[in-house]
Structures are given as structure tokens and as C-alpha cells.
Image (cartoon, rainbow, N blue to C red):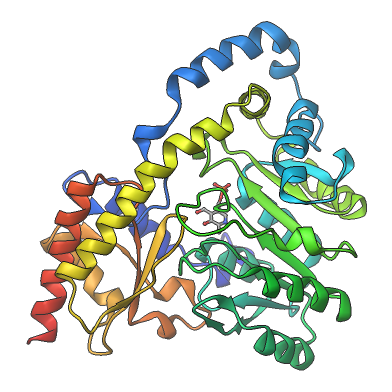
Length: 396
Ligand SMILES: Cc1ncc(COP(=O)(O)O)c(C=O)c1O
């Protein structure tokens, strides 16, 4: 009889299957996926860039590459993204990964032994939780207030559990949309040093800011090398390219490169070359300028629709950027059970709260809505459908 590895026993695909199923059904207005707006993909620019890079570097693009990444992209990321954000780094501190997802996977493979405690925000990104569980981590939640992680609770949990690492999404958090203020970021870097804690800062949304002031990454406060930063081109360029980056000490990068060698040897070089050329041609700032008003309009449409159509008993976050609004509904409503009715009978979908929590029951009365991938008209219509359904349950 075929037997499966024990490590897969903790991994569940239910939530992801629902997300993909309902997002691929054109009859459903889906607020499930965390995708950028298709309308703002820079398709023509990428077509041009593909032929430019083939002219310049066809042999390298079609060959195996270094596991560390395509040198022009490591340099471009360093100069156009990392250094301007106040990060002290050099080429040897940059690793290119196949999306931030692979970065999280390689970090987990490299650092987590079964039973190690990993602190996570509560709620946190469902895919990362699944990866940590796959490597046998014991997950412990850290409390958040409206601004994200509460540093007092973090320090308490560090003392109590002696964790291996903290995993945090400090900017426009997935799923809550919350952003950690600068002084708490600094404090986290200090706690990492004080308690010799590894901090994994997953920051794919930091450049998708629509209102408020820019906040520096935790990594920019890191004096000791305890912070590993994961970034991604998925939300600022296109998720299909599957390009992410890790910024960390040389020693950590060397360890992660070993893990990457066995995972996929190298991230697809054409994708890396596209990202490099996009940065080197100076196209990112204008691309962001084009995206921000589109997303802001969609966020405003969603907030206005929630105000108009959702029962007053529901509470929601007002993010300054990113892709998600997080909603808490009354305890009489189970969002996991409601999804089936919402999607099949009312043709609208969302992600229920349960997969974002260590204890799924903690998410029974919450849900995540994505606002980036539908037009304002669709957003109004979808939120109205969901609001009507919630009203009908609350009013019996
Ligand atoms: C917090 C967070 N980390 C990582 C990812 C995955 O990014 P990538 O497409 O670069 O693998 C996502 C995507 O939704 C995310 O929300």
C-alpha cells in the first residue's frame, strides 16, 4: 500500500480548493483571490522587454542559472528596491526565489525542526501557516490590535515559548489589512536581537499604498542580522512571473541557496530578466502610479458598498493599501458554512476566516474580501448580494 509522509498529515487544501473553485467560475463574483487587477498588467511593456532581453542575453536566459539568482536582477532589486527602503545590504544578501511562497518554504525547510515554536499573527496568511505545519512547527498566535502585532504580547510569548521565529506580514497584512507603525517595527527588531529570535518579515504589499505615510520595513531596523525579509513581484508586476526575493545575512543566504538547489535549481531566468529590465528601465514608479488610483477607486467602492449594504453589526478594517478588507460578523453567522450558500445560491464568494487561524474555530465569524480584482460595478453588486444574505440571516 502506498503511504504518505507524516508531515503532510497537518496540511489541508480545503480552503485553497474553495478559493480556486469559486474564482474560476465566471458566474460568481469572486472576492476570494489575492490577485492584482488584470487591467493593469503591463502586457505591452512586458512583450517588448521579452524581446529586448532575448536580444541581449538569450544564452543565459535559456541555460541553467545560479541558485542565488540572475545577477542583473539581484543588482536591480538591491539598487531600485532594497537600498531606497533603508535596508543595508549588498549583492551577497539577496536571493531570488520562485515567488515569496518559495522563500517561506526554503526558510521553513532550513530553520524549522519538528516541535519548534513559530509565532504568527492571529490571523495570518493561510499558505504560510500550512508550510510551517508541514515542517512540524508548533504555531502560537500573537495578539494584534488595530495597528497589528502588540509588542507586549509578543515579548510575553517569546519569554513563555522560547520560539524559533516570528513570522509577520507588517504592511497591509493578509488577511486583516492592518499596518504596523514604525515604532513597533523598531521594537520587533530590538526584541529579535534581545532574545535571539529569527524574524521573517513577509512584505509583498508594501508598495501598494493608497493613503497615509510610508513605513520602513522591520529589516531597515535590523542591526544584528536576525531579520529575513521576503518581497515579491507578484503584486507589483504580475504573479505569473513567480519571482520573489529574500534579503538576509550572507550566512543565511548560503543556507537557503542549498535548499533552493534541491527545490528548483533556479527561478525561471526569463521571469527574472523581465523583472530586472523592468526595474532598470525605471518603469516601476510609473507602473505603481498607474495602479494606485485603480486600486484606491476599488477600495473606496468596497468600503462604500459595505457601508451601504452590510448589516451595522458587521465590523470591517479600513486598510491604507494592499488588497484586502477583513470583516467580523455577528456570532450567529458561521462564515465557513455560509460560503457554500453565498457561492452557489447568491453567486458571490469570499474567503472564510477559519484557514487564517491556528485554531480554525477562531475564524468562524470573520471573512476576507479582496477588492483589487473586480471593477467598482462588480464590487457594489457582489457586496450587495453578500449584505442581503447577511441581513436575511440576522433578521431571521
Ligand atoms: C503575505 C503573503 N505572502 C506571500 C504571498 C505569495 O506571494 P508570491 O506570489 O510571491 O509567492 C502572498 C500572496 O497572496 C501573501 O499574501
